[in-house]
Figure (tube, rainbow, N blue to C red):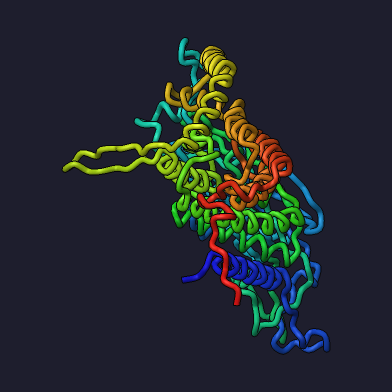
Length: 539
């Protein structure tokens, strides 16, 4: 069996190897080895860029209800950019005619052609094109109403009325189309073509050399859920913003890998909304800050694991509740479960929801340990029994109850008043949504007050030796990391503010740690004191 320190060292070692491997993979994505023969002017084994010939190009965007087209039948031209300059960035807003098939919960596709100027794409042998759906299927967001009056600020979308149930997905319009062309005059080695770029390449033989035509790319990461519009049956035209910008080879390869990663998440069962949260990290963040985010996320994962491990180890070996606030444990469990239900009701990203669910399970287990609960089965009926407290534990419980008595005078009126105010002035999807929101607002706004009983117990006992400081340390690191993620990952505003509230709580605990040095006569976190440990025999 590995000791605790050996296991932690093993985990840290695996983490270091993982970070090093990730850096190596990222370097392999960004850097592409050019064809060595190109430096000497040779053409053998090299693939040359067709854009180096500086052809005169034209950009055409068509729409159709069919995923495959062979001619110019049943298609609509929505954008035509003559004298297309691959170096110039632009953004155009056009109106797209919506066919009846699409209005009846159908699909509409965009065909983007890059071809020689003055020649129709169907007649140009050196044209490149790419297809992108302009529609996607999602479940409409439920309407929010005032629970007392039934009034709503917004009219219920017609598409929701046309469906038999709100859990049926309907067709949504993607209002943005972002195009990129790789503009680097890069010469590829035919023997080591990157697989990610190769599937976007179209090659032609020109004399004795092989050329690859312009690489046209659609940035799917820019298609966000917030830009989606429900398609109504009465809608005949919808707006479409077409934007273009050049892209480097390194960024192109990185973007392809990120799009593949998002697609993989959806294949593993992640919803469109969950995938959208990941897209937001890449699209709305500077690339340098994004690289920092990757490393910060890796450390967050490591500290999360070490915090869970040490917290479970502490409570697993906890023999008594001396110096520990039972009320604080119960409140922490209640608030964690309420926060998890709130995030579930708000359909928050799984990146936030899964850790919150794991934390709720652990807090429930800690309540069982704190109350000394045992469950015995009498046939098919469970019987719950509670253990007894010794004199020292009863003294701790007395301090705990004293702190809660004073807190209740302030806390309960604030929570009840806040719940009543929100019922009168805020709109919700259901009574359950109001109840969960009222609980979670109380947790977020005044939840730090329930940390005070533990601080009060520490003050009365003039000791903090009974607290799980290893787990606290890792949680403190994660709290400051959460401050960074609060600006990156989409989450409710109240959950974002709670991240900064936890900073204050940890600072108070650190102050008490400095104020009350460890007393070796008191019991430690494992229920034993320094002087009780057997002395080693001298050799």
